[in-house]
Amino acid sequence: MNAELALLHPYPFQKLASLLEGCAPPSHLSPIPLSIGEPKHAAPGFVLDALNAHRDGYSVYPKTAGGDALRDAIARWLTQRFKLRSGLLQATRHILPVNGTREALFAFAQCVVNRTPEAGVALPNPFYQIYEGATLLAGATPLYLPERTDRPGICDFAAVSEADWVRCQLLYVCSPGNPTGAVLTLDDWAQLFDIADRHDLIIASDECYSELYFDEAAPPVGILEACQQLDRTDFRRCIAFHSLSKRSSLPGLRSGFVAGDAEVLEAFLLYRTYHGCAMSLPVQQASIAAWNDEVHVRENRRLYREKFDTVLSILDGCLDVSRPEAGFYLWAKTPADECEFTRALYDQTAVTVLPGSYLSRAVAGLNPGSGRVRMALVADLEACTEAAHRIRQFMQHHY
Image (cartoon, rainbow, N blue to C red; front, side, top):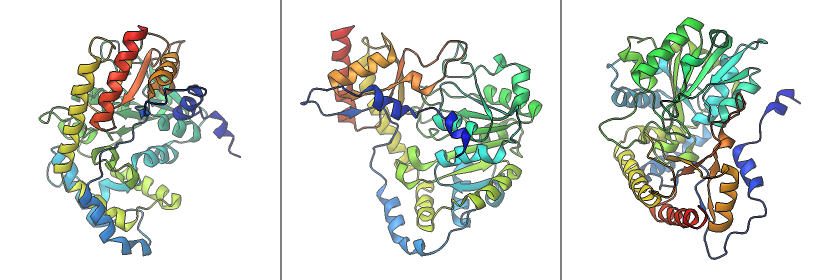
């Protein structure tokens, strides 16, 4: 058995299930889970129609690189969304379809990390659990980046020692962030590009929440857009990860892509050819339909804006929480230990949230997720509204 499996931490939802054992919420209250970031908006009907219309494609082995039509659709979407110059992205060199970003983020570390005793991978703290697991199973040591005191949710890259950067081969970033919703600026990207060039490391930019923002006129800047603006048009050392799960409310489709440095993607394609994870032809056709349409994405954002407006107005004055820059999470401060808060809230209201400490690691005795919980506003407006009222009543009764 792979000895590195023993290094993996229990998954956050496994820990949550243990935490809530023995709780007995009131039987008249229906459970409202705000703990997991699984989109609950209806899947676009035209995407499901495309999936069904091409079901004969299940009888064909798909290519690992994906079909030309899918890569062309992705290239068009990237060019439009991130204001790239026409022709800058070459679909056959700079784009590779993947079965959702979770699978790709994990596999990427296995491909690019050179197993040496000093190998390190830098990741934000708090973080998406896959970054850490991928690091450990690639034989590397996680470097948990500190958070800036002046910009919560943004890593303090300047606080990392040169010795630690020398060890790093890969840097995971997430913008908009999970769980904080913080967004990297163009200046942040310039700093990251400088670090990557000085220390010859690859940047894996997880942008699966990039299409969930509040101001239609100000979408978050992505790594490829930053590359163009900073005259890095070969995308060297830069890989973006995108998915239809959050953008199009299609988590079960398991469809996304990676894009960027052509040499890195050539190696990743080789790895994936042996990994055996090609996207089926019906899913490719459904994905083309989704990437070609923005109407359903704008409606998706409208639904999230409505929920944030409603929930934040209800929680105002009773819970220390504010609107994030993007994404669909609230990163709330708790008036007591976050695990005690989570257990008591569920026991008395049937509302489930996730302790922030389950999404982060203690460094120098401090866990940046302590005293916080993550709430995913993924349920419908009625359920999110009811959850907010229950939380408010819970806070008024106890605190």
